[in-house]
Image (tube, rainbow, N blue to C red; front, side, top):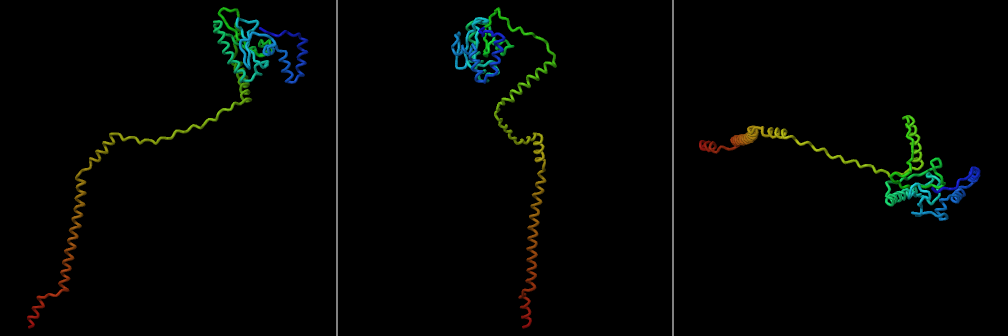
Length: 269
């Protein structure tokens, strides 16, 4: 892979002292001047470019692990991944997806190894962040990462989990994401309870009760009302007769009897 010339311990110490006294702008300018990959981006150093846009450049590694080994490099100088803005990281991996697909088609390979050496202890040799895409074939001589698979007890595992979660929670708190306000859910309108339909048995009982009333009872009521009317009429007639009798008696008392008067006059003559 492409890499810078190694510095002696004395040169490294002198450089570190120089860097400590630099302003952020001077440091960035110094890094770009010293970075071989910044020279590739600017065109001062030749390369085998297979892709380029305003943010990223992809070149073939001059010391490939396999044919088609690609280095994807941001044009802006970033030393390690945490310095790269979120949006740019997302964009880089979108480009990597298409480049990996191109490797699969071009070399008829079974897969690609995509990795990042983020920091010197992780194997990073250049002071410029980059992403490797390596086409993989059957029985190639590249060894996969020989990671030891050691056992770990539950207590230690839980402690590691807590440490990571605490740092993730801190990162989320430092960059809060505004969530859209949830609209209150409308409560469903309560439907009026439907009165239960009467069972057929109840209906039959009601109808039986209706039919159970004897017609003679109704007849008796009608007859009673009729008799009351007749009694009222009779009473009215009796009152009328009594009134006539009374009137006749009154006439007898107050009126003049012509026959008796005639007899008196004749007898007197």
